[in-house]
Structure formats: structure tokens, C-alpha cells
Length: 162
Image (cartoon, rainbow, N blue to C red; front, side, top):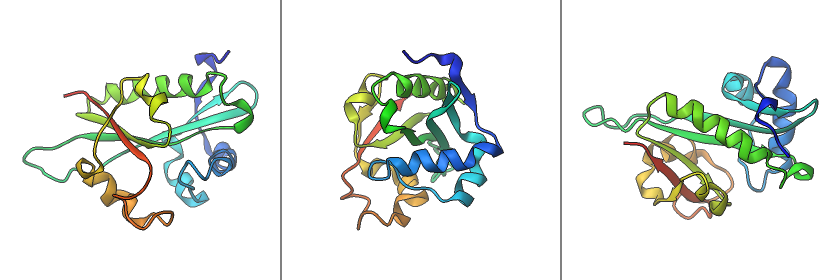
């Protein structure tokens, strides 16, 4: 079974393997270019027990209203090698990153996913994409997979902390 002692922060030498693991699940995870991964490699965490088996990252969403800021963080690029799925690696990675994100004291943590039942186990609840304008502004608007962020089949989920 997966063990938290195998989670580590990525370094420059991991960029290629991060790319490969995300690409392995490209129908479920938004593909990322090498330059994109390079620009944010320090926010990636890996499950590495001698071989990297899973990756997860996060990003800060823009604050749209400075009078009433919604400090929101998003779990992104969460991918486990197909041959290693179902072994608890995703659970260990998500628990690790949620611990880090909660320390930043955000209002909420969001994720867009095709696997809502998995995220519900961690306290995420479904929400409307209409409440995720910072996410749409930051990433969804440039997505080449779907015509509209509001018709994308991914489920929007959040953990409200405030």
C-alpha cells in the first residue's frame, strides 16, 4: 500500500517524468507543455518509491474583488500512472497537498475532475462552475478540449474553509 514517506517535492530533473505521467492520462488531465511545467515545477509533488508513480500540483487563482477577496487555491495536474492506480498513491498525494494548501489559509480549495466520488472522500463538495470565474479566467478560457468552460463535462468541486 502507498506510504506518505514516498512523497517529495519535484526538482528540475523531474520535469520530463511529470510531463509523461500527465500525458498518460490526457483524456482526464489537462496536458501541460514542458515550458509550463518548468515554470511551476516547484509546486509539483511526486510519489516516488524508486520510480515516480504519480504527480500533483496546485495554483493560486486570481483575486477578482479586492474589497471582498476570495483567496482560492486549485489542485491541478493530478495524475497517477495507469498501472499504479487503485494502490492508494492518489490518496497519499492528495492528502499531502491538501495539508500544504490549508496552511496558506485560503477561503477555499477547488478542483475540476471527472472523479467526483474520489474527491468527496476528502471533504470536497460539488459546486457550480459559475462560482469559479477566477478559474475560468486563468485556465478554462484557453482550453482547447471543450468549446465552453460551462459545458465542459468536468465536475467543479470545492472545500470551503471560510
